[in-house]
Each structure stands twice: as C-alpha cells, then as structure tokens.
Length: 528
Image (cartoon, rainbow, N blue to C red; front, side, top):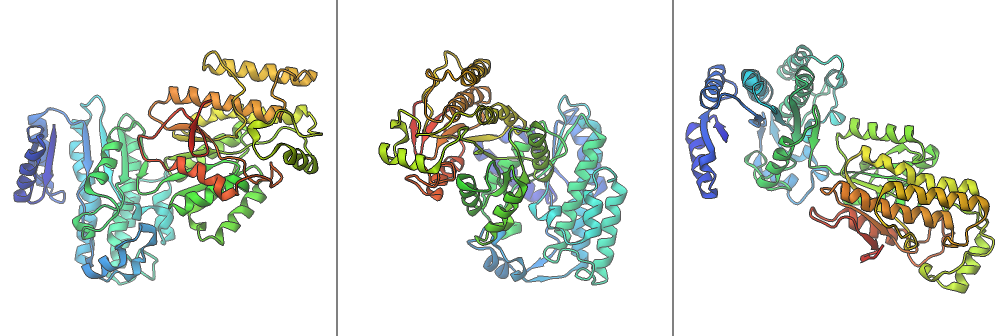
C-alpha cells in the first residue's frame, strides 16, 4: 500500500486516476502534502498512524531546481548529449534569492521535517527504510567550495548543526552576490547545495538509527518537467533505480545509477589497458589497477592522449596480496559506494621462455594455440613462477568482497582439467597435486605447454562455475580474448590488443538478463 502525496491536491487526485489504468489504484491512496508546511506534515503523520499504524518505507522525492532557467538554452545545451558531455555554462539562468531559499526549504529542510515526523511510525516497522532522492550533480568530488566540501564530507564529525551552518553561509553569500567569489556552484547553485546537504543528512541519520536502512541515490538524468523532458532515462527507468534502493540492505550509501563503475586488474598494459580504454570510451568510470605503481601511473598518463583521463583512476593492486585486495575493495566502497563490472585480467605465464624459441615454435606449429602438443623449446620449468601463477587463482576468492557482476579474462588453453564436481576444495586439491608433481619434475600427466599457466586458468574456469551457482543474480562468465599480441606472447599473435579487448568489453556491456556461468572463446560460447 502506497500513500501518494502532492502539494497540489487537484494534481494529486489526477495522478491517482491515472493509476487506475495500471490496475493498482486499490493499492494507492492520496494525501495532500506540502513538505515546507509543518501543519501539513503533521496531518500526514496522523493519517498514516490512523490508517495503517506503522510505516515501512519513506521516499523523500519532492524537489525544485531553485533557479529561473531559460528552457531553450537548456534544450540547446543538453539535447543529444550524455551528462558528462554537457557544457552547463551554456544554460541561461537568472539569479533569484527567494527561489534559492525556497529550494533549500523544499529539498533539504522539507525531507528532514517529514522524516522526523514519521520516524515514530517507521520504528514500528520490522524493516524500516528511508530513501532520499538526490542528484549526481551534488556529489562532493565536483564541489568547488573547499570549506563546504570539507564539512559535508567529514563523516566522523558531521552533525545537523554543521549542515545548517553550510546552508546559512550559502544563503548569505547568495544574498550578497558572492557565489563566484566564495566558490559555490554557479549552475543550479541552490539545487546542488540542497542535495549535497541532503546527502550529508542521510549519513547522520543512518548513524543515529543503525537498525534502519537509510540511503540516498540519484535516479540519473531523467526526462521530467524539471529537465524540460530532456534526459537519458525515462521516468520508469529512473523510478526503477529508486525502487531498487528500497530493496537494498546496505546503510548510509549514496547510489548514483547514472554512472557505471568498473575495475580492471593487470591493466597497465596489454589486454587490460585496452579494456580500460574501451570501457572508458563507453562512458564508464574505470579503476585501472597494476602491481607496479610506477607503471600504473604511466598507463594513466597515456590515457590522457585518448581523452578518457577524467573517467579513469589508478589504484595499486597485487592480486596475490590479500591486504592489497582489501585495500582496493575499501577504495571502491569509499569512492563510489558500488561496483558494476569487475574484469579479472592480471596473469603470469609461470614459465621461463626465450622470445627466439617461442617464435620458432610458433612458426612451426602455426598460430592456433589449441593445436599445440608440446611446449616451445627451452621453456624451462620454474617452481617459483608456477607458485605465483597459481596464487593468482587462489586470491580470486577475494572477488567475493565486491559482490558484483564479474567477468573473468582467460586464455584459450583451458580444456584440460576435468572435475567430477564443481567444488572449490577439489580445485584446490588439484592445484596442490600439480605443484607437488611440478616440484618433483613429474609433469608428464599434465598439459605440457606452460603447465602452471594452463592449470591455473583451467582452475579459474571451474571456479567461475562455482561462483555463478553461488550468486545466481550476478552475470559471471569467463572469456578467452583469442591469441593476442602482448608481452606474454612476445607480441606475436593473430589479434591486436584492441581486438582482444573488444571480446572482453562486449561481454562486460551485455544488458541485464545476459548469460552466466559460461566460457566464451572470443565471441562464441564454447565448452569448458
């Protein structure tokens, strides 16, 4: 049962009539509400108490933009563009202090007053949830005012009084015409500041009521009256994001559904670097990781030349170090609050091979890796290298820290480990047996081409099947990009780095409802 509220009673009742078309009008009731009016808020609280006796979910959605905007300039600036492509300075706005003040009352103090009035009823729920509808425009990473940014981002010392101090300072500077001088946002200033304050209030509220699920989120760039019906998303698509937050169990997060976040491991060169570049070109914010910090930062510098630098950040990661993995997980959680795509690309060959002998063997066998039956000449066994190669598999258990959509990057050599059951302990036992045989020099029963590499990748293939079964709502697959010209192949192969990366990115960008638990050889589904 939902209580639909609106400031204008006539429009609210008209909205209720429209819901009859969807057959849900018997589950919806209307009650007039002006979030800036304390008497109206008290009336709503009394209505909910009398009619239902409790409240389970509160969605604070009411909001205004707080500026006088020229519709034509807005349309001209945004039409046909993604949010990060818009030059907001092209939008013509007229400053208006009264509107700015009203915006803060509606977007911040209104939701706060409604929440406080309904808290006693929410406390009677078995699973109380509060969702404050915010905006990506209010994210503090884009906030120019250093003082306000510092106050609102300091989760430890954040209080409602400190939030009020920021808003009072903003209104005073607005009144005095000092927005630019004091480095406040100049485009939709009141809207951005009010939503940033709402985000901060959400954090204080979540800390105050730890048994509640209290979050804020941006529905994305939605076609509404506020955007003059321009945007990337329909109203239904934007609403889906908010409803999704209603179902979450995590507390105190900001969810920004307009941005997709990805992590790519082993991304300072080769297929990993190509994958980062292609994901960024699709508007995705990517965390480029590398074991060597210097090389990772150099890779980040290279991306400047491609124009994707603002969509890529670097974080050091050694996939064989559990502390390093945990540090990355904490970074993603702190910076983004979620993760959409994980590409596990980092790998080591696990053997000592000379370029000359590799190329010689390749010329003799041809560039079809699956047809090889013996290792290139002088590919010397190396116990330490073998252990490192297998350790990369073992630490993939840390992928469960992320709990997201997972894409595993594999190699074509993968069909040589037959498991009776997809049990992780059986995979581990095979790897232990392999290392023991490898140490003794008894490798005849194992595949002869780069044995540590082959066995670790085959184990990883099996692991993703376990993971896909364990998390049926995720899209978890492994893919061979093909025989790509990289450092591992001494830059010999059939495909360029970009062509190999395309095979990974294609899978990463599949829409919801895509395949899971599969092995793909480039574009085609193949058997394990």
